[in-house]
Amino acid sequence: MNVFNFSAGPAVLPKEVLQRAAAEMLDWHGSGMSVMEMSHRGPEFIAIAEKAEADLRRLLAIPDDYEVLFLQGGAIGENAIVPMNLLGQKKVIDFVNTGEWSKKSIKEAGKYAQVNVAASSADRNFCYVPPRESWKLSPEAAYVHICSNETIGGVEYHFTPEVGDVPLVADMSSHILSRPIEVSKYGVIYGGAQKNVGPAGLTLVIVRRSLLDRALPITPSAFHWKEQAEADSMLNTPPTYAIYIAGLVFEWLLAQGGLAAIERKNIEKATLLYDAIDGSGGFYVNPVEKKDRSRMNVPFKLRDESLDGAFLEGAQARGLLQLKGHRSVGGMRASIYNAMPIEGVQALVGYMREFQRSHG
Image (cartoon, rainbow, N blue to C red):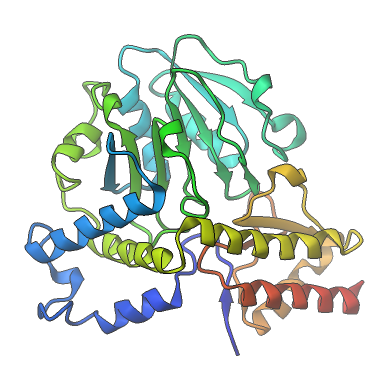
């Protein structure tokens, strides 16, 4: 039986990446060492880290005036690290609130600055992205923060907002590398790796170099972007094995044809699943406005929620794993990241139709 893992994170990794990591586990390229055993300052690991950065730069076409940092702490850690590094002499941060992860960022930033919620979709239970023309930005903001894909609510920005000369900061944890983006439109892009990049423990930060002189004096050295950039992300011991796996994922993405090719596959998978939901006659429901639906995280509910347990039990028996929705919203959630093959989505859709026939 084929098994398909729909976990929101830590999440499915490409089978080819896992196979290669297994083959190299005991002896990386004839070094006699596992990557987990290497010194982060030794030539073997430095080569791994340098190649990972070069491949990420190639995938995202990252301009030369941006630093790429391989750090720790996840997006929740960055909720504090971002304001510490970008506030400078400013007192206000603008936020757009599109759901649970936006709310976490807003709460944490409030410890360091005045928060201005420039727009929010709370009025309709976070089922849409507020249109740019509705945003009420502060003229003195240090930066504008968005969560460009809400992992729990399944809401995704399909546009890059224009915010003038103020840096745009995006938490892209759950859809980074799922499509091409124009990095130069952002001051900072960050995200935990455990959804679409690699295993838990690694945090990616892409930051415009001109923003590196704004850190507050209280910023710890390990979280100080400029100091980490000057130390090639090795001011402290980095998450070496997670960087290695991420590097293998970057190689896999390049072999797939890059982000334009992977985006086409992601559109195909998302369309297949949303069409099944929308075509169920209300048996399954996705609450998000169609124009703002996430390609990566697809929440849905059964019209009769008393059937949730039976649905999950049947899915598990068919090798369709981790479909239970987040505890804050209930229902179901299928996370269909880059590494989820189309066959997994086809299997899920087939089961959903079968379940509806027997319980509709």
